[in-house]
Image 1: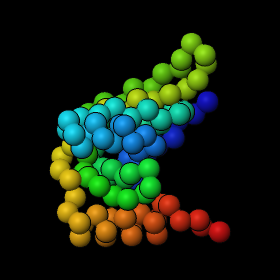
Image 2: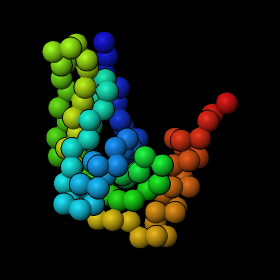
Image 3: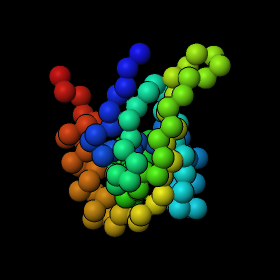
Length: 105
């Protein structure tokens, strides 16, 4: 059992509903498997499930827990800082593919 750090300032949504809540209401909570550390107060770029940059978010809480089924989960709560412009989104998406999403083999 260990912690994985999310130091690269990337919040990638796996759920369209979580992303929709962020963009619609300005707040959301994202659930990740395993223990992860998201520093509270840190700003990050939010990405769609299709790896497209869409917004800047501020992490407001990071709660790690073990469920009754023994599964390690981390719930990350965040607020929308602002949506990215089309130009910013393209640049951030291109950079993220080069740095995080492309296959490094």
